[in-house]
Amino acid sequence: MSEEAQPPALRPAVPILFVRDVAAAAQFYRDSLGFAVEFLYGEPPFYGEIKRDGAVLHLRHVHEPNFAELAAREESLILATILVSDVRALYAEFAGRGVEFAQELQTQQWGGTDFHVLDPDGNCISFVSYQAPNA
Image (cartoon, rainbow, N blue to C red; front, side, top):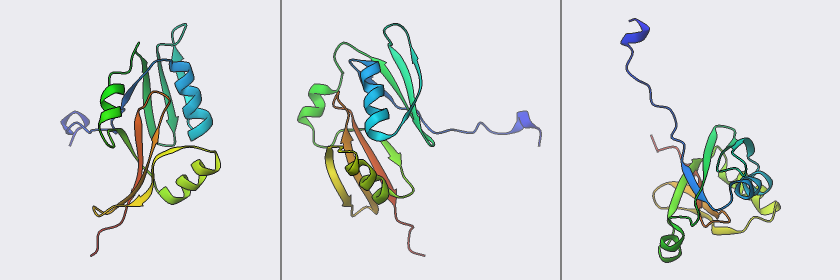
């Protein structure tokens, strides 16, 4: 089958988080969560990318984060979920860095173990590992 006959392949989605200060948000993700700042665009920055391993998040400047009020009213309004090979080890790493958790590490009935972190703009990021289904 020729290359052009291959069906389109989907790649991982890249969530765009709305933040008031792109540089400050990038610094939080770098210093607290171990992400690398791939780029910041503009002066002052109005767009950027952060990355850790295969997880990529984009940051976009807004004057007021769109979901800030809704997130304050809604329980666990997750804006991005990041799959992790060892969520317990990542939780321990973050705890060692003094990260505050919006949800502590929990094993869920649906088969995942997860925890949540809020960034300075109230964006809730979930980190999760799934158990292998029983054969």
